[in-house]
Length: 222
Image 1: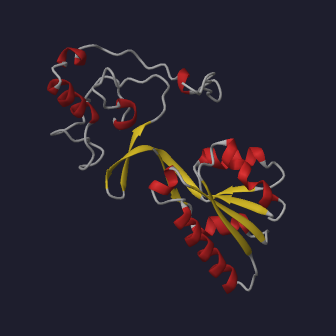
Image 2: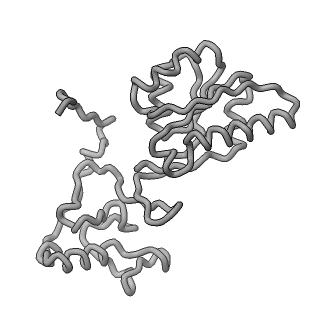
Image 3: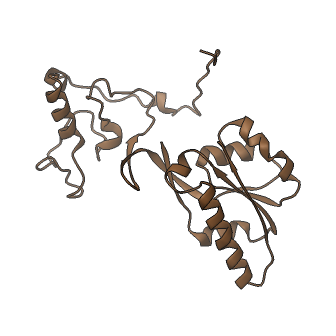
């Protein structure tokens, strides 16, 4: 899941200060789950912006909408009827959603209301940890389902390093060493031999070093 957090209110206010009619758009997917940009957060941000403008003696019109997804053209198309009625759009989706709206409605300024953080998983109520960096060449089949690229603080492909102590990383006492986790997982699976295999330096070109990545599915009915 893509995780995000709302930008400081001051930054959002600076974005919209030249405009009087704002379309505030939420997303019903990842940012809803991590409580950064769903319907509830759209309402809270709209109220905060109204309150700020009231204190400044400025009148502002804010239209609230929440799309099922902002990264799919079919849902972004639902904004067509509103575009001529607003001066700017504020998206509460991840960076993919912001760009999808900006690409579709080129004549309308589109601003982000959240900072996209990482692809992560929920480890407990209200807490998410990074689990994937989208490197384009997944190693999880070799490392027991634990990603060293995302979870090792030094992104080591062969570890652990000399900075681990009692299964914890040297960068902080509450950060687990990914390679200790990998070893324990492989041992539990009876796959210790995999640990002895030296992995070569990773080729990050599949991760998009040469430009934006694309995945093409010719038959989406399967």
